[in-house]
Image (cartoon, rainbow, N blue to C red; front, side, top):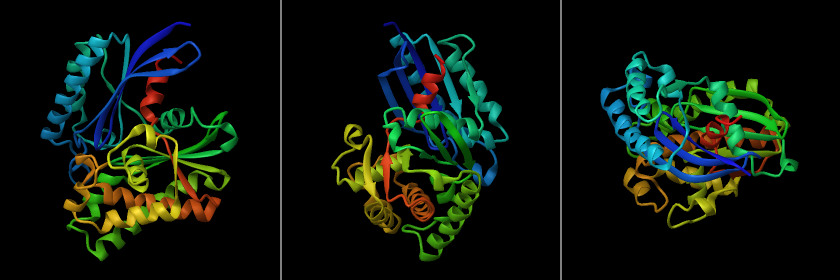
Length: 317
């Protein structure tokens, strides 16, 4: 069986991630390298409508490192997608000019592309459910990012409905959670904003048909690591693990109430998530409440595979 080596890059509001993988003829994906760096590209975008020059520079430094790895490992195709922060920015051409320069030096013509929220949702679904038993479907996959949250319903036959709503851990934190720790009024306001955005998504996605909730991306996987009382972040222990809603709520409420220093001291916590995990926890809690009420779901299944895997697979399909 032959394989092809490809590279996928996902540049979101909070982080930029790289997957270099070998994909076999039957679609099996084997990791070569999987990396994540928090660059906070979406710094201030919700308020200013523009990408900050220092945020673009942080992203450039990380992308140069990724481009060197793509070259060294011999990947023959690359796809870089940019999501919520870049969709919203007035000066996004500054960002794209940078990506053309960096990626084009490795593979001529390579550059970032902005994808719609709908395509972001579909790529996330493809990556998230590949290893799950189809009998557990239909699945509702939630990709909780920095600037947006994608909600997707589907099964082994594909996606039935998808919606991207403009709320994520960075956007909600910048909009509502200003103190350390946030005040009760700030938390209440954040719950209202998150509730409105999630309700908007669920008007378009009939989650009452779902049997299993699958959460992807850094907020969800970090919550799972904390729920399982891990001393350090361990992807092998987190991947496809389950968290009952009562334990999930306990972890989320604790993070919202904690100080920045208390969150930073937690073993599985990436330093780039410390200041925004409270916002992500509020969105997660609202989702759990709605999925429990609408679909009778009582646990969160967490996948380490997500939009990155979907991007890589799209290069051979």
